[in-house]
Image 1 (cartoon, rainbow, N blue to C red):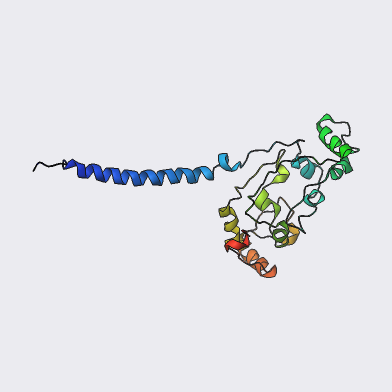
Image 2: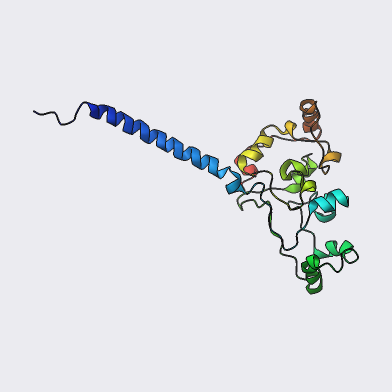
Length: 216
């Protein structure tokens, strides 16, 4: 009986099988890189706003504390978006005729809030409480970066689960003294390992990595 397959078919079959496996691995690797890339996560991309608000100017130049605008960051899950009245506390006198601030003036006159665009927008299936983190020594800049140096605000972290788990698995690497939480320029000292462990005990921080901690 004549041979149906040439002996080289064995080599072709092996190349095809291994090539297919390599192709699957390559596809998943590319997808993994894509979902974590700035293109997909918008890291580093300034978000357009109705008014070109500069955190750099208000924080660095004017010395305004985060809590002046984000009033509920220490007491609730949501940090809070300031009502137009907060803006007008200053801008009823400063730059009161500026065309750039016309949306602020219109909002104040009409009573309709300014439609600010979220910079950091977590999925609905993720629960995050600002107050818990702030009161446990997690600084604003840990998640939001040096907002005080941003003329236009942008994300500095992907806010993906791997980013959150990095801190939840070893909080001692990231916590800081409570009086430094709102200090955007704070950097970990040389003895952060020792300091972090002390703060973890002092603030009764638990390393929570179970699913229902964030997914409720």
